[in-house]
Length: 328
Image 1: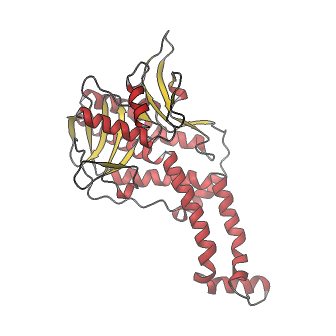
Image 2 (image 1 turned 60 degrees about the horizontal axis):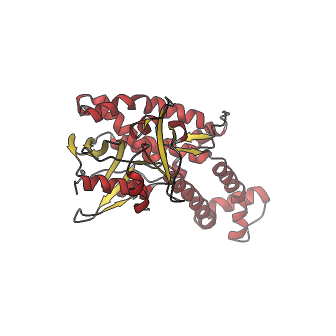
């Protein structure tokens, strides 16, 4: 197996909803925007690199394979691929503007340079690929699910521990409100009902998720900025596919013969993102341009299948359908 560089020193804080500033949450809570029903979690400029021109001048098309049902679906345009209904329920329009301005507007020339073997001729192109990796790590259903679980756990922890850990403060507040000495933890817990209900409401409306994804993107992007980018090209006769969760945070086994995918970002030894069917980028210690062995192309295709939320995509008429069927 070709070994992508192993990240040795990086620290990305874990998602911590309590660490999101209330000022930002209040800003997002008051935003009134049109609903964006279908939101892309995979940039269309990346999807295009896996697509082929449709018949009769219908534009670029991809063939989706539903890994849940085990069925290949009819080919469709890029607008119908790599998207999730109501991925962000709050301030989705400004989120898309943010991703465009800070990442996606710079990706197309950077991907073209990577495919042509000239990425490292331009520092701005390298930065664009790094930022694209950060965005696709965070703008994902996997991170959204992790965030929701963290919020639920934070609420439960506060409900359970605050009457003990904040006892003196809560007792003073109870006496101020009711003029009585609280009978015990149960009485103190009544003071938490309002704030916890408000936090649950913010979570249900997607406000916390929106704030968390924005904050986490900036943390991951800043953590990757000191790193370099490796470009791995695919040999003739082989091709990569892409999933609806394409950025892979992975960890090598101790003997570098196996890869564990979808580990926590802070526990990862490497991060990879397919840029096109003939090119893959990874975070690395030094700039690199190399060719992937066919066996490693298969490994990373398998990781895409295993990490997919629902779909993988490949060009129409690709031979990858049989590979996906065997991998699910």
